Length: 338
Image (cartoon, rainbow, N blue to C red; front, side, top):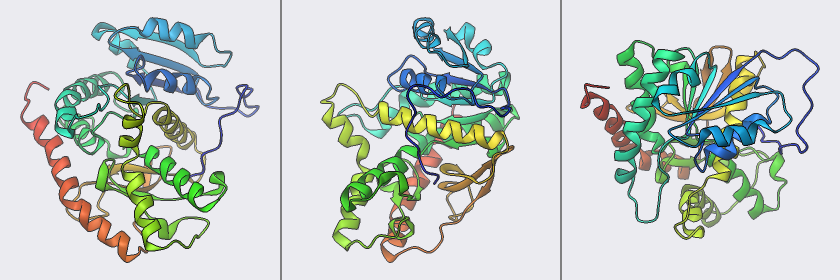
């Protein structure tokens, strides 16, 4: 996965070379992830139009962000009646909409609320910007990506190259944790993270990290579990008053910018993402490194050589990931009005 550079401050000047005009829409822009994500996308020189949508409060968020002296023209949209206008002409749609995970909330609780939200938004995308790249942040991503795929199939607009589950935060955490543990420069660390985006389905491939770093079994296991439980770590640290919003916004902005770079024809844009895949038989969606380009996900990379620990991790995640995928498929099948 590509290196994550630190964000510049003050914001960068407009690039001297010609950059394609690109519209980015953020759905859920008034929420805990959406607000900092909107700000970070306003700072991107790759964005010419920034559309901020939520069910309420977005005009104020947009007015605030619009005062930042960067080139992206920013507008807020609120409520169902303005969703179409928010999406019209978008090149990339980022979806952090929905409720965050709270202490004591099961994945099933989260699913019941967010599944309907995601399905409704994807129906609108299929109508107003069917060719846009869709970056799914709304949890549980292991199920919301299959939901989005099924909705797009029903609407006749599904393009697997244009639908990406954002697992970048798992990569961000893996890099941070392993760098801290081993005294490495985190900006020079690369760690592929494969599988899904929840608990045991998150698997950092430490054997493939760069720079190559020798670690004992206990350290590998501890770092893996910390990466898997990173979201819970933040929920507990915030004592029930929030979840991982700021780091998720950073990761979401990084992946959205990578998609824009790919659309603009930049070479060798490689990220990890949860996409339709045949890498693991029986799992129609899976996260590995992918190559992004002008048509979206242009290459899905394999798992490569893995340690015995990592091979066991793949086996351990299969049942949960398969169940989560099927749950998303069944949700759309069981709701004919979608």
